[in-house]
Each structure stands twice: as C-alpha cells, then as structure tokens.
Image 1: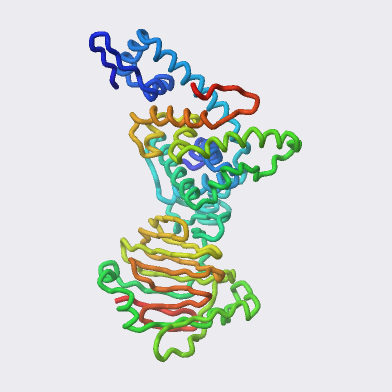
Image 2: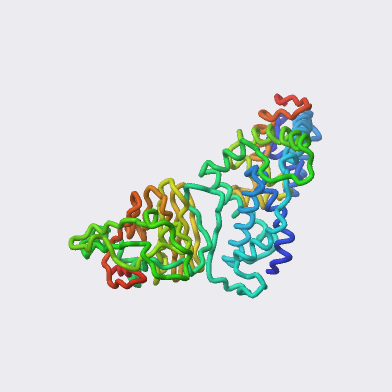
Length: 294
Length: 167
C-alpha cells in the first residue's frame, strides 16, 4: 500500500487497490488511507468508477455461462465411487481404493475404478528394499537377471469372466526377449474380464515408490491403487505415488505403445500389441506370472 | 465431516465453477464429482473455509489437467451445449448459445490463472480463498483480478451492448 504525500506530490492508487476497495477486501489500515486519497484525487475516483462499471459488465457476462444445473445423480455417483452406498455396499470412511473416473477423455490416461474380478494378470512382487535398490539396479540389470515372458494372454479357462472376443482379435503375441523362451507362450495369462486390455497387479509396493504408466494414443489406460495413493495425470502419462499396498494397472489392447515403470525402471512395455515383461520370473502358474525385483 | 451437509453446501458451487471454466456441464459434473471423491478418499478435514478452499483448489488443478490435455480448451472455445435442455424451445436454445459464445471466446483469451481468478471472484470467493486456490499472495489478488477484468472486457463484445473497452 503506497500513498505518498510528499509536499503536493501524490502517487495514484493502482487498479488492484481500487479493485480491493470495491470488493471490500482492503485491510482496515489500507481502507482509511485509500479513502483519504480518494477524497482528494478526482483521477482515482474516476478510475474506480470505471473499474466498477467494468466489473458489473464482467459479472453480467459470466452469469451467462451457467447453462445447466448439476445432474441429479451427482450425489449418488459420488457415493457409488466411494463405495459407500447404503444399499448393501460397504459403508464407512476407510474406503479401500482411490478411484478416479475420466470416462470422456480418449487416447490418454485415465484412472478408473476397477472391480477386483478384473484384476491380476501379472503380479509383480516388489521387495521391501525396492525403493533403494532400484536406483542402483537399472533395467539392464533386471534383464541380465533374466528376461521373463508373458504369454498367450487370452487362453483362459475362467468362466466367471466376460466371454472373450473372437480368437483372432484376442491373440496378442508377447515377446520375452530372453534366450530359451518357449516361443513366447505361457498358458493361463489372461486378459481382463472386460476384454479391453491387460491388467497388471503390483503388490508389496515399497513406501514412497513411484509408478509411472506411459501411453501413446490409443485407448485408455487406468490405475487403481490402495490408500493413501495419489494420482498425477498428464498427456500420455499417469503417475501413482504413496500407494501403501497394491496398484492395478490396466493397459488397453489398442494402444500403440505403453509401459509401466517403477521408480524409474521399466518393468513392462507394450509395443504394437506385444507385451514385453522385464525382470526375473520367480513363479509361473496358469493364473499369473510373478516377478520379484531384488 | 457430514457428507450430506458438505455435499449439499459445496457441490452446486463447485459444479458452477467447473462449468464456467470448462464450458461443458458433463465434464463439470465429472470434475466436481472427482473432487468430492478425493475429498473423502484423502480424509481432508478442517474448517468450513479450509474445506471450501481445498475443494476449489483441487477442482482448479483438475480443470488445469484437462486444459493441458487440450480437450477442455477446445470445448471451452466451442461452447457447445452438451446436455439437452429439457423443454427449452429450440430457438431459445440457439439464443442462449449465442449469448454464451462471446463470453467463452473472451475467457479463451485470458491466461489460465486469469480465468480462474475471474470466475472464482464472480462466484463469490474472498481474496484469501482465491489466493489459496490459485496459489498467489492474497495481496496480489486485487491487481490480478483488475487485470483479468480489463483483458476480458477488451475482447468481450456483448450482443446488443455497447461498452467503451478503452476505459
């Protein structure tokens, strides 16, 4: 706040201070000084009048923007997403997941609520020391430890899931990059229940881990994480931090390229419809592939 | 924190803010809902004023994410009515659209921060709330607001209205 009264020299009030006066946002001390100045300064009084007129015009114009009311189902939608509808679903504050839905944005990341039935295609078991181990263990270290493979993603016997699409559409080749891989096939790895992509489950995530999902145009990727996870979304990039237990990542089949990184290292990449799994395989079952990082 | 009370008090304003910023009522609903989900997901607490500031700050960030993706910005400038207006006659809908377009075009010429400050202030927010939500000093809000209004009026031409933008 500057009002300089030096002899007969006076510094005019700036627009910000005049605006604050009109908005009744000046402090008591400033208010008095500004009022004194205005009483003596015709120039500032005129400017304040113009500011007031301009503000009224803006208010009138902005009032035209609201063309719709919130949907009546907004409250229900929020409750559903929080998993706390009283109609038999779980109620209470300790909700198990952070779910963010962006259904209208195409060809970029979205975070979505994903039923557990759709989960678990690949399981990455991340050791407790991962956060500190990874910076010294670049991707090539994992590769040296043994490139793993995934496999015939859609050869599932699980009848509980949504019926699969035509075989020719479902057959997604997976390259393992390893020596001695069994033709890139491993029975039992399956696509998610909705048949829209591949779901990766990351468990035993070390505190402070950063999971980054990158996606080139094509479809929508998603993540589903336990509390107190936070999500960051940018064009072609989704970040999950602070997950305390698990993160599910869903990659779309139609993506040109996608990858899943943990603390700067790439665990999985999806290029041209092929899934490449990096990291030592510690277990293979008909239901999943498990990777463990030292 | 009482969900029903908080939702009833804050959701309409949050929706209007998102609607004004995005120009898309459906997207505004998505973003306002997302903000509320995060509120409960992250167990945000505090005073009513702090809660309101958190809600609008979070919504602001979500809208910014959308703008950066380019999709919302395109929507903002197009100003298309996404939602059916029920019994509104078609000619009235056209007139309403015509009134909205120049407003959105003028907003489209503002910076992201100018838009947010302008809409929040004209949505009834205090300077402190605006400062908290947008991430500026409270003492600078008046200056930023005055500048945003000037830049808005310099572009905005209201149908049937005359205003000397040199003022």
